[in-house]
Image (cartoon, rainbow, N blue to C red; front, side):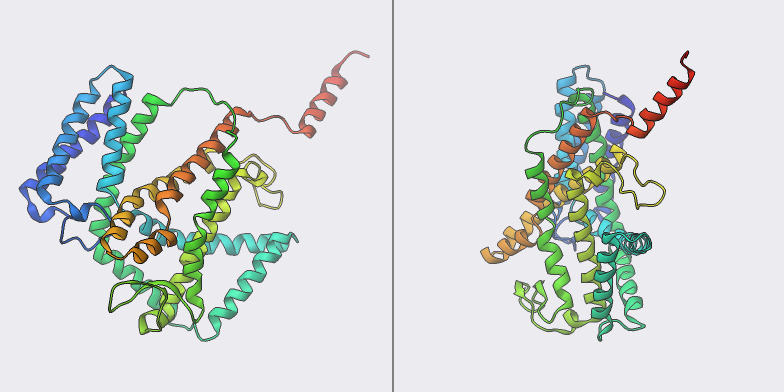
Length: 379
């Protein structure tokens, strides 16, 4: 095991445990936690501090262990503690909001390039953006809507920023332990080619984004789906018209997040598509070049990890609702317990296929090489 990372996160865990015991107000989770899509709101300060101290002690022992199986198993257990228990869905929310400007900017740039190069994808994207613009312009979008939306997002991060930072800290420690488990148990094994189930699993993973995309985009219609009733706190399949639902900034938020979900669907299908291995020719700068394996695998595994992290909190939230239909709708709209593992399997299958199929020279390159060798051969 790589000793320095293990020692670093172990000492960090010990320090956190001591902090939570010595300064009770520093504990960010527990019954008073405003984030209830989590497991940690069920864990009291004393228990959480004990878990941190135990984790730190175990980590120090693992750092000096010379048995790979024990190292890997212990690191995997540590990763499970931090990623599935101590972290939560706030990671997913913060990443989602952070990606909104990236999604919007990227869509506009790729649409413009596609139209300029007369590619069907560009025309289709331009038509979709035109339809969306018309929908927004018909009473939904005015000069102050974007400003109010940005103010709402900034207010949310201002109120929950410290709480979100704690969740990220737990996930960071878990990520280190997950990497150490990988290096002990998996890394170094040779790739064997893409598994037979790759296509099926990838399609199922892509479908995981569909319910959430439909729900969020439905906020553009008079029949918004899948929201909480402000009076009863229960999930409504078709939301009633309220000031909060009809607010243009709320609808704009739904559109932005819905588009992010659609992007997730498209990128997931790229794992089994030709353009997921080779950039299309019309893409500027990198057109007709191989897609770097890490460019797909790293974001894909991060996305799968965030979904898996959110899954336990969503299950807890569904059970705590006390209503079977609410529990069903919660997990139907955002099926993270299935979506996350399916996406991880799809990304793993992509990596296996790409790693087992080394790049072969393009035919033009091979022909040029033959010409050069032929021209230098004796006549």
